[in-house]
Length: 209
Image (tube, rainbow, N blue to C red; front, side, top):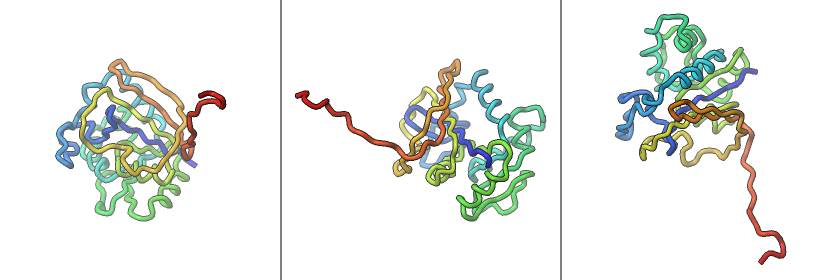
């Protein structure tokens, strides 16, 4: 079975909304779109190239899919490490409103998410990758379908915006699997799914008053 990986950008206060542009997602009156842009550098680009190099297929939420579909098909250089993969590999979009996608290689998922994603994982060579797609990512995490999370923490606090790990998220434990730091201070941590959290209590040893 293939491996489902999630690559997510978050601020230090956990905001996941509109990292790539001012007009990317203005829901709830969000005014801080494009907050990841100042932190782009060679280290960041190298990491993204490595991630896309492992891709076998992509699973995207409707909003992220529409952003990608409006940009990446116009990048026609097959040597581009991101466009080359996105344009050539299978893409699955979870949507009840998209019926006739124009981006070649796209399949629409509108049924049982757990059943369909499990089937796609089983038929994918390489990673089934989720990029952005916060609402979809939250659903996949709740269903324990995400095997690995690449969490990129950017050194900025916004104080507003939609958060990836929102109130009501399913309690989940992860195992830390790797870390690196870009020259502009983006902390990239990789976590593998480990199950449910364990709990304990810090107590004084017996006989200590």
